[in-house]
Each structure stands twice: as structure tokens, then as C-alpha cells.
Image 1 (spheres, rainbow, N blue to C red):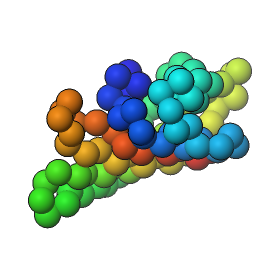
Image 2: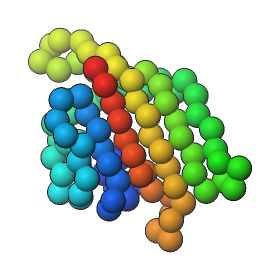
Image 3: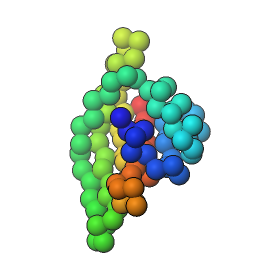
Image 4: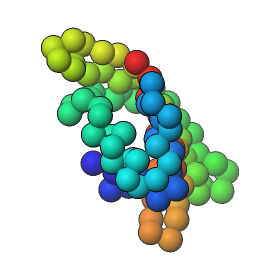
Length: 92
């Protein structure tokens, strides 16, 4: 679902591969992640202007019957198309 909200120039970071910097690379990076990830929001804030927000938290998943745990950060910016994610990062 995140891919529908990624800006074309967003950066998607994952542990291991280089950051995905294009729409085609975004799709490949997101497809390599587990089908289901549970995100637990821990915090975030907004710019004083209200045009940039960020959230972060814990992430948990199971891949090949092995549980995984990491963290996530998402940065959102309002653009002409509406709110778009400029940067998404997760680690395991």
C-alpha cells in the first residue's frame, strides 16, 4: 500500500541493498519485504509550517517462519498530488 503514496523521487532504505531511488526500484524494494509487517507507532512530529511530518516506530514480521524485528521511519511532505512519502526506512 505504501507504493501508492511514495513520491517519484522518494528514497526507500532497507537493510542490505542500496537505497531505492526511482519508482521501478521502489517496487522491487517493497516486493522484497515480507507480505505482512506490523508497525507500532512510537512517535513523530511536524514542521512548524505543517508541510512536513515524520513518524517512527517498531516493526515486526515473519519471513520463512522466522520472526523478525526492526524499526521504521517515514517522512511525509505535502505536494501538489497530496501527502506523499519522501523517505521510508526500515532495519532488522
